[in-house]
Image 1 (cartoon, one colour):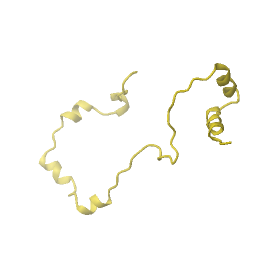
Image 2 (cartoon, rainbow, N blue to C red):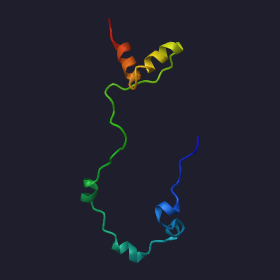
Image 3 (cartoon, one colour):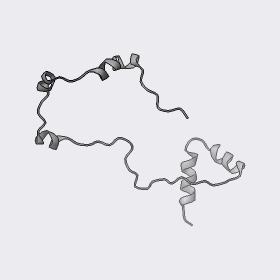
Image 4 (cartoon, rainbow, N blue to C red):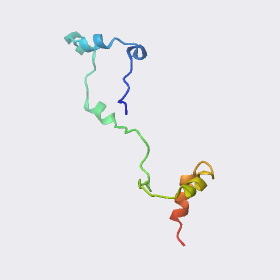
Length: 91
């Protein structure tokens, strides 16, 4: 499986070698604002991704005859969800 694809220079429109070679000078530090406790308090961490499910799915392996799988697939998109609903019903 290929690794992460790195962005090319063309898509970044930046000379990364020049950026990496830059050394921040004392004059440039004066331009930066002083970091205060108030600024830190306003900050928040946002984690990406999907929200945590209240009923998470668990991956399992089950062997079924090909005819059973074909029959479920023939019912159209969402067949796995319908199968899970049918299996979760109690009699």
